[in-house]
Length: 459
Image 1 (cartoon, rainbow, N blue to C red):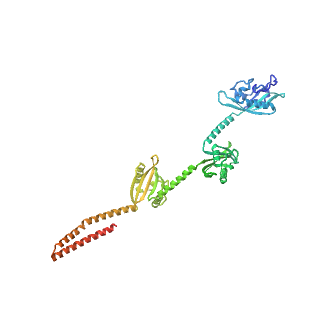
Image 2 (cartoon, rainbow, N blue to C red):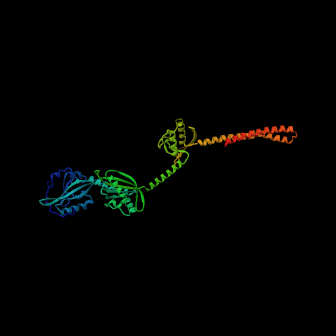
Image 3 (cartoon, helix red, strand yellow):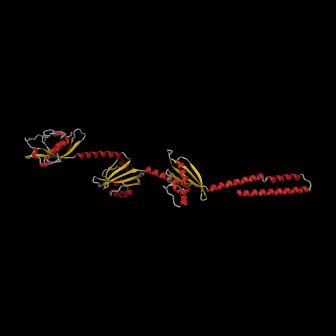
């Protein structure tokens, strides 16, 4: 016997079909069978036959075991034993039957009760419900849950599922690790999340979770103070839904962003240093992208744009819009040359001022041009200084020429006259020489005065 039942006296020629109610015999949804006390089929309705005809076309007289998976034998025996001990009860058992040529099963949930005739047990009636889809779905959910849990446990993000009453329903390994590391206690299923939230954070945590329970998704960054350290965390509060799309809890997740925050702070510091460096120069500095959009401009550049165009220049605007109409085509050509890798330095005179434009290509680490460094400097003072030096040089050259030519003539005359005086002995000749000496001296004095006047102009 399949189930190890005790032998019972069986009446011969029992028509089991007459003992089955019509609503079960003619059912469209419920498979119905009757097995005798020896564990053999004695009745099957049409639903059962249509569903399990891949096993056999005729079950009557065959052992019940032909349609039971080996793993379910014990379960069936235990259920039938309970029924025989409590003949007035109804018992349930969920068993599978292997599908022919397939790797999966068809599942049925059976209700078992004793079938009697004249108060004598003559068999067991099995009324079934097809639960194959339910079992397959459950199996898929179990498999998905295993995969999901594996994914969650492989991340460095903490994930905790909370009920609406703030009970911990689930958590991943990393969440438990972080709790042990920072709070020195493990997470426990069904414990209160408030056991793990510091008093200083409890108010904001409650506000955020209440918003999530109303359907909001919250993402925020916060500095959390643990007993032994401070950590920047990105917190996410997400409503958790059931199959009916009802909010039943909260998914609370965190990820450590301390390194990113440190990098951001360092980047801000570098940006401030770079801006301070740019703002300390005497040049108006502007950085353009390859589309000639302004990405950065220092304070002096903003001031110059304001003075010329009478409105503030902002990041994102096109640099071409800030070029004088008469120079626009020329500068478009300069920008194109710079984007091809050339350096352009030019000087322009505008509104009684001189300006020097220096345009350089900007490269990334892969030596690819990513923009233009456009620098402008007012060089009017430098230009005036150079012009003054040129004028001074011209005057110095004139002084040098006058010293070598105009001074030489009267000086030579004086020297010659002095020599003649030494060898003249008559008063009449001496008078003539003195007159000529005076004339040459006056000429020399005039030349020297002229040179002194030019020398003062050089200063």
